[in-house]
Image 1 (cartoon, rainbow, N blue to C red):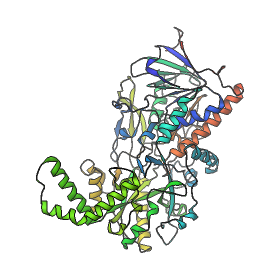
Image 2: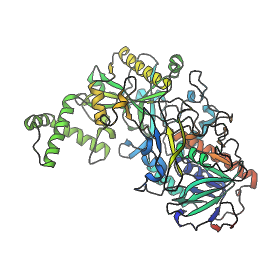
Image 3: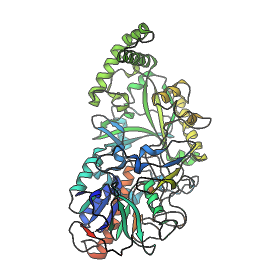
Image 4: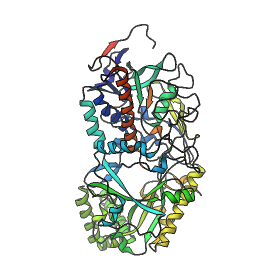
Length: 594
């Protein structure tokens, strides 16, 4: 059931078996998986079904970085969390995201990657990945051997240095609508919207008894439970542990000053521009476009082989190919834009005859592209970025080169961290402060991967890979970045397609068996705290390059199994708290600690 935290009686308390903080993919998955365990769940989220217009109150952060812009806009205060911000265009399915697992090497302690290694191997998570795929509605994934029988070809690299892998996609409505509705409809789960947790309360510093909650209206209530799970995202999970400092001045789980450290994301790097020697290649490599194949929405992605990572001491990386119009096509598009703006503003266009001539020459190609994309995308205003380009004919006449977009792994650097800032939000809480920058290994690996790709393109006789020049300037201009972020093109720094990151916030409550090196143990329980767990990307020890949602969902399913086992051990199968009725508010004793 869905309730408004703003309507809770002032000073009241609600009791449950498991209190989950945050209704993004991690929190929703956890609540959904606990349905079969008959435990009573309260799920708290500071937002509602829709993102409020004045959403910056809770999402404000202080930010320091010479390399990136603030990830302010990559956070969501609403049911569904950042899934509501998934923006990968899916033909005929709206917007979504890539859902793929981490690689086995990502779980290893790699000698060249400081602080790498998970407390368990890939095989431990494999069965939970399968359950995560089922929950996310993913169809069967074709094995690599099936790629050759596809209607399109792989790029024929000579060696096994650069490989092609398949990424699978899912629409965001699977989380923001289907999963949200399933949890809300359950009588075992009470979802409170407009309910921000401001503190975890403990009298002994070991066991948390209640969570203090406030609404945007300023009213306060509390939730009492034997188990608490933080699922508010990497920035908010760290902030809440740091804010819960009444008994432990450094915050819960922070005995070794690890809370908030090791922040990671996946910045999108413009790795270069691949111009094929044979334009017919644009007609043959549609595998790298998003399309329905093997019963699923898939797209090919270039990746560095595991053997090459070990040999060259590289971080994990994935690369996508995005076609760009050739010069005549691009010139006609620009001329059309000039004429359109002139007509709308009722102002004379510069060099009208030249612009009209450019449009007339390219009209057949422009029309066929627009009609073809509109048909495949089911959109009235189609665009190449929405996919479906591989279904068009004669792409050798339409495209000139591919932009290569690199999604790199970042090193877990302890100096990239979340702390408490000086400013306060609308609820009077210190806003989070984030420090984030490249490391030397990050930059060296990006450079090494780009060099490797350029070499393999040449060895295979496919064409050439350009680093910068006019194509880079045009790419930045197209993305609206050239005027705003000139410092990101500085000497030695990679140009970024998304300077704020890919909203893959990771690592601030990292998992490690040793409390001196992590915040949570292998079961995601906060070190030194008996009954607080963490779900989501903040527990990742390393990031890999894969979009993290499938791993987040798999870890949440694993955690739900662990909590359900605890419930069964404590009190049979009916939960920790006697009774199975939905939680209701009770008045708080006057002398209770506030």
